[in-house]
Amino acid sequence: MGVPRVLSEQELAAGLADLPGWEREGHRITRTYEIRYHAAVAAIVTIADRSRRVQHHADLDLRIDHLRASVTTHDAGHRLTAADFDLARRIDAIVAAHQAIPLD
Image (cartoon, rainbow, N blue to C red; front, side, top):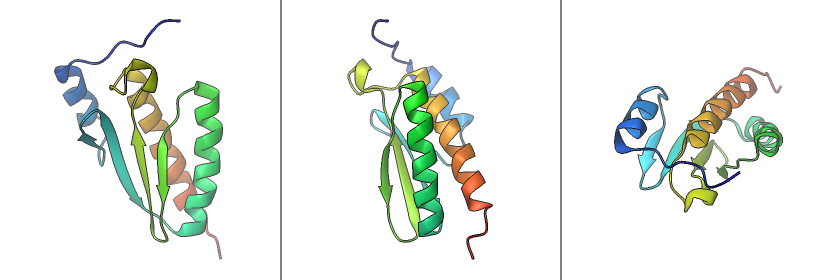
């Protein structure tokens, strides 16, 4: 399969322009979602399942009132690739779906 292609600075800027809320922090992209704790736990389970299916994983940090996702491609020397932007879009959709589910 080989090492994934690292994106150029121009490609990174274009990718971030298409992902509102995501920011670049060095060689990773991150986003913090304001989300209730139990909704975030459910979102994490779905994110883990989808990540397994695409064989690309995010670092997730759960707090009482927010969830922080951080994405980089480990197989590319912790650099950014197209897979990171694909996973970020998937995470956005998953979190949006879980925020819409009433928990009470």
